[in-house]
Amino acid sequence: MSITAANEYSTAELSELARRHLWMHFSRMGGDPHAPLPIIVAGEGCYVYDADGKRYLDGLAALFCVNAGHGRPELADAAAAQIRELDFFTTWSYAHPRAIELAERIAKLAPGDLNRVFFTSGGSEAVESALKLVRNYHLLTGNARKTKVIAREIAYHGTSLGALSATGITSLREQFEPLAPGGCHVPNTNSYRWPADRDPLWAADAIAERIEFEGPSTVAAVILEPVQNGGGCFVPQDGYFQRVREICDANDVLLISDEVICSWGRLGYYFGSERYGYQPDIITTAKGLSNANQPMGAMIASDRVAAPFMEGKRSFSHGFTFGGHPVAAAVALANLDIFEREDLCGHVREKEGEFRAMLEDLRDIPIVGDVRGAGFFQAVELVKDQKTKESFNDEESEDLLRGFLSGELYRNGLICRADDRGDPVIQLSPPLIADTEQFEEIGHVLRTVLTAASERMA
Ligand SMILES: Cc1ncc(COP(=O)(O)O)c(C=O)c1O
Image 1: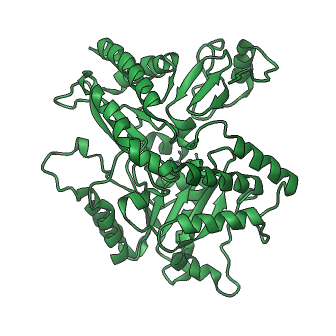
Image 2: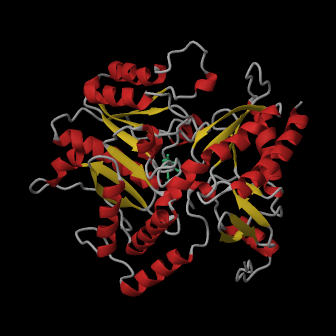
Image 3: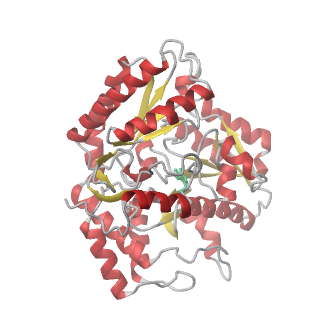
């Protein structure tokens, strides 16, 4: 493919200008003002290219987003056609065909009676909308005191002050306090760190205990990801979500499934809740919905939860200018056509074993402690000692991840995530079109770089 992007500036100039003017998210902007920045200029399929023309395997699907792969001409065509037809109109008191068609299509794919689709511009807005909806729902149904939300430790649910109160990562929360009140946290499902004899449903039961502790009449909802991203792809124990569903029902607490990452084929199904066989009251989604070719998210609510808002003069007093943007909706519809035509969910189910086996094969490298995940969403946890599972301390982790792994993986042509919001992990979430060739390439880079990291840390 042609990777000549129409840049007005040289790579060095772009880097300098970015350091001067572009406020990159969650990025350290200090340090050497002349050090080159990773500047990505083009993408095709599972690969992206930097400003010098070097190719990288996008093993993170551009932050869990580009599920159908980069550079899909159908999506560009859909956006262009929509801009010509109706460039923008709002969903505040008006509707337009693309938002209607997309809402219907999502409702058909979503589990059970999740039939009401409220569009947003991204994941944090979807979560924020869900958190406001559950409070409002309980208010309208006579339970005004039900305002608290239970979430899990180390889970990430977004950055707005409401979503942040559900996020369970202390370092992200403490610097912005006070947050929206009512966020309560319970243990996650990271059984790698559990004693061997622990009851597999211990983490589910911790939710019941917390509801009891807070007082059931004060708890509005539980928010959980099907597979928790923060901490590195924590999968649920068998029966976990069924127990959580029972607990929610017994306490009139709504279950929000935060599928900003875990929907649109990431786990081999349109929705992660489908994989684990549970029925949420609300799903929050974003990222892969539009292949991230346009910013778009959604909150999908059940008929039961939506019902009180559909009566008489009532409404849900909440919205965003760009919710259901016609161009984003047109792109999302074209993206779902690709999903159907290429059976991307089926491909993930067929190939996830092979992807996982490649990662399992790395277990002979001394710092590889655990390999876990589901579908095309997998993590490798790094430890100091495989036998005792001793983790690296903060300083070692900083040196391992930021001082070595992030840079080395990138230099070796692999984009993935080296993260220590819990214990240090490498996360992989390639586009869903990835196949044997990409798995082998990922495996080769990981083996080279993790072996070197192991020697460095020995
Ligand atoms: C589970 C989950 N919820 C919410 C969000 C926030 O989404 P956004 O960054 O689009 O606001 C994310 C982002 O990664 C996420 O992973």
